[in-house]
Image (cartoon, rainbow, N blue to C red):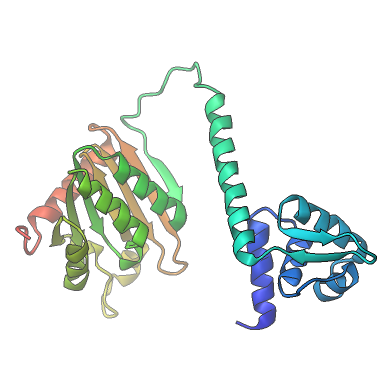
Length: 273
């Protein structure tokens, strides 16, 4: 990554954390200088000089920049570790404020719909990973997880599964390969097996039905307490992950997937593992 690419990446990340473009550019430039005047900042950031003052005023208010009131004025960024911690705290406080605001709205007075036949969808690997972890945390008795691709095996997933095992939740995990099975077996107190669901596996190049099967590649199948189902699929072309979710022992999706997963358990190569 070139210096210019790093600069643009840093500016983009700061914007994602709530800074406006000019504010982000001024901060990144100042982070590379012992101190700087508005003229120097403008020259190195392409931010109009008159806007530099507005941007640094906001940065000062957010605890990211210090100002020396001399003539001319000098500005300097706080140490990067301090800036990251400040931004983290500000971001976390927004999460807390959002939760309080939404919860403060109260529940709707409308009667809740019967969820037996409801199926909901979710897109995006990050959101799907978060939902997976949330459902694992909700488990009271049993978690059955079948892994269709190694990409879903994140450190966060291992942490949540470990916490579940520590809370005496029964863990049953199916994988597609012996290598993945051994890796999971070494890290988790769980029953781990090679799944008998062959249609989860990626097709070989000479498979005539490869295109069709790739369109329905499974990322993860999660069943919690035998009444909550979460299934994700991967688009091999874009890498986009999508998922469907259902609750209720009589939910059609839950019934079907529960039977498929039971088949995988029965057909596993080593069910006693």
